[in-house]
Length: 148
View 1 (cartoon, rainbow, N blue to C red):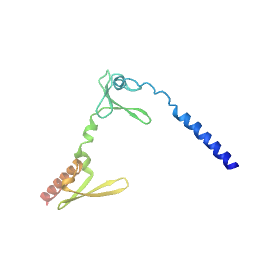
View 2: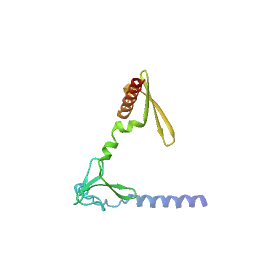
View 3: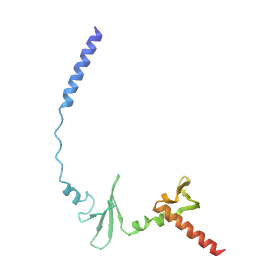
């Protein structure tokens, strides 16, 4: 008797839940995509221009250049010194990487915060940073052999 009662109550509960899930709320109206893309978020000057890197660039009335970005903690602002592009070049990143050629394989070592990272790749599979590290290693070995 109790089993039949449990089956009936659960069947009623499932049918009630099914009828509630069939009712969908009306979708919220979306804002025009061009309006949102043209205005920067709150805290960033309205004259700021969004760059390809996702940051907003702004020049104030005194002529100083600023870079604004959205972070999980809010809006961040920093002076635009132009060092970001130079810092991201492959040659500057590759300065801390030691490359050793062994035939068709190149072995790399880089000192990181948790010790030395080691990896190896074929010469044909190198990316830009690894190619720059290999060139730096070749140039260093040439200057070392000239000094001897």
